[in-house]
Length: 218
Length: 197
Image 1 (cartoon, rainbow over the protein chains, first blue to last red):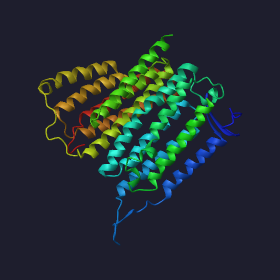
Image 2 (tube, rainbow over the protein chains, first blue to last red):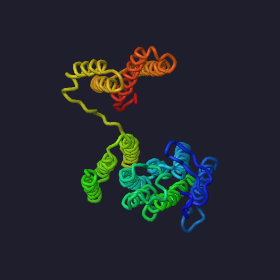
Image 3 (cartoon, chains in turn red, purple):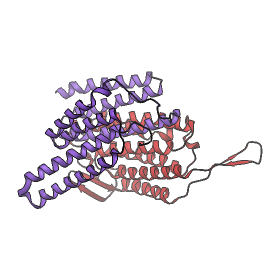
């Protein structure tokens, strides 16, 4: 599979039976990126948002309650771990499971904020993420039914996976990693609690890059 | 051949579920409809019809349920539904039936033994606690659950270290898992909101 142009050289392959988790140059770069932001989520202190009063010198400093901080940090770290898994998974179904875990943790990061508008956004995003598991699992199941295996390692370069399955996978990832695109309407970024909110963007960006790799490989 | 026929049928079902989601505007109803859509997704996996498909449905189901629970929590907080209901569900059958139904289920569960027996007997206890209420029952159930788990693990060691006593190990493991599953399910029956939960 490492003769494919997108992968680059093979760095490491971890075998579990027919499922091979692999680090090519491409996935290794994504993995390191995800690892970096997971470490950042672990060690960094949360920001303290400040609202300036319009037309004056006054400002409000918002306080983040420790429970919310703790919950958001936990969810951000869980999101980072799920991203790490999704980056190197060599199994289509494991990839879909990691993707939906990223979706769940993203809901968690946003929903920690007790603000009506933010919760509304989290709810609507959550429904999209939940419905997106249908095309995700459907894509993996159709790939399994037509080829008889879920191993990306075995499917690589064969072109055996039908276009429908690939399209369903991409649509599913679009649903799970939707949060950054939802911002135009929603209040997610106004929620206090960076750098944990940042994790939403990082995870969905990496998820998109990985599903492109999978769609081009299998 | 049947796969080619069944897949379009299931895809039509998926399309119907998604159209329903698009039309529905009420938030709570949409939450319920997402579960419907999720089930059609599981049907696509089930069409593969192998042991592997069966093994894939379980994580799919778990993901669906966990997302449903997370979203339900978000919905409760969003709508500010934090007060516990003053009057929990109460029906006539809950006064008359629990002793008989609970007893029958527990005895039948013990006859079945093992995981499925535990589920049946646990259902009986769940019904009992749900109807009759509970006080101080937690600690006993938790203790029994802990001991039965230890029994279950010990049975596995017997399988590995002294395989000639396999019958004893089977009995111990079957009894252990029976108690364990029963205790787990009985705890669900005590969750009626209020101070103990």
